[in-house]
Image (cartoon, rainbow, N blue to C red; front, side, top):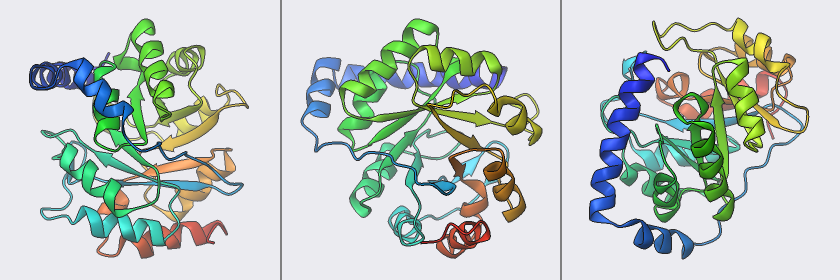
Length: 261
């Protein structure tokens, strides 16, 4: 596991311990089970977008000092995003569960909690705060925990996007039962992006799974490129967060491949 992921895993484990001391797992599970049914993530025939809200990123620094989560999410919905991704990691990305709750209340789109999750408790926590799905990073979870965490998500009716950086990550994700497999083209050691990774790893995603391209999609050319490689969706964060009108930017991307509806 790269040093960055190790750091994030340790910090996440500390937050889980604090959360569990405040809300025991039985109580968190009960809260999750009493939420409204989770919204389903669906992709159409054209390349879809999971549009992200985040204030900062290690690769880009501070993206927005002040962010209206509600306004951004509503602009994404009007621009026909397939789903919304909300960063809840508090230190490096300046996110929170409060951001997640705001997003859920502002849109009818499925909302995904994006964080560095290390155990099933955090899936119950995500659902209890309204999330319809979660992002899991295969490299951060051993085989047992990955499968168990996916099982908890399925039990709660949530979708799970399992992020991969390598062929091995994809293999492990699919063996664990992942329906949505994401390829992240960022090098976590130097934070550079290698767009070629999208091409190299796409062939390892089974045809009965949904393939999602993550990171580095900053132009219409790159957006069209992942469509040509056969991806079903792109997760786009920093490029949209830099825009004053993210809805217009998203619509421009979708129109570039004839996907606007």
